[in-house]
Length: 418
Image 1 (cartoon, rainbow, N blue to C red):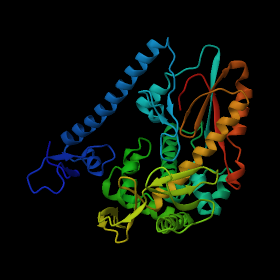
Image 2: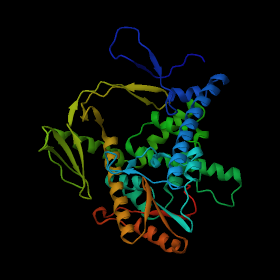
Image 3: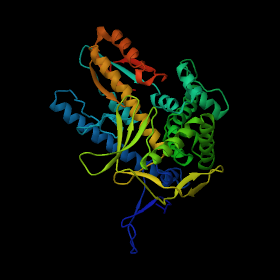
Image 4: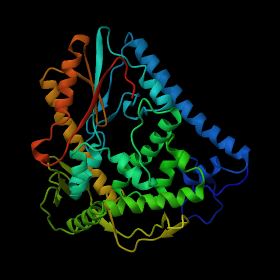
């Protein structure tokens, strides 16, 4: 395999001695993606095989874990979730089998499909539709986007139409296969943009996302034109929904000022507090639900780290921020987009948690929940009634989130698939 410009890391930072170099070969690494598309077919094949082998090995290990658990539990799989496993308060996977990252395509979909309800029962699966994009629009007061969500419009298709300057819509059953596949691919680009660009993702990283997407990557195979397209998509998003980039800037400014001791009162309240148990301070971000996020040892530090980005020509460039960066804990950095992501995911968690409590109060047994999705097991005779309960409760806006258009996509299934 010929030498490549993959990202390299020093084993001993700051050492003047010769050091070992470790290639960054993750599937989302930009240089690895270049190698997968290398002109030398041997290089491209080896890199594709390497990525495929890693994914397959992981899936086989997961299957073996499931087989062992099911063998001990007489065919049943207990779902172990760690409460408040993420900083945002969301649950995380536990027990050696993480249901949170099975994936919805390829091996992930096949593994999900192995999970079936008890005999005589069905699964009712409900999902908080586009909940993060909706909360982002709400926090930013992006009213046109909020109205579109409230009206039930297909935002993904609308934005994809703006990207590709043609009508994009959901594929229809009567569409010829080629047209249906093309419409799904166009729409997937719009979906990735709406769901991914709300947290400050730049064109450089968005390119990696799109080249890894099995549905949409056909538009991003030629690196030079793909880079230009990603730059255009990011600029279009930020121009179309201009209040969202403004939100990133405001939140970063508010957090920096809160670190210095100022107090902010609004939908999200910020205050620096001292711990009564430990000799340390926390930045407390009070959420609309009444719950709060805590960032220990908040401070401002100089981080002279170059950041890569794509310019309007699609070329890779770099810049080094000159302002001090928000840092907390052992050195984790915060910036506008990351702060937005934290707050949005925390609020989405609270919307889901309240819906789960309401459903269980109705006697609906929630056997599992993954991110913004709830899975209920009910006797077949109760399926339609349970479906109605799920749709109603997952479409209810909490009192503390007035003006947030909440919606639900739900259905009845005999196995846990998409």
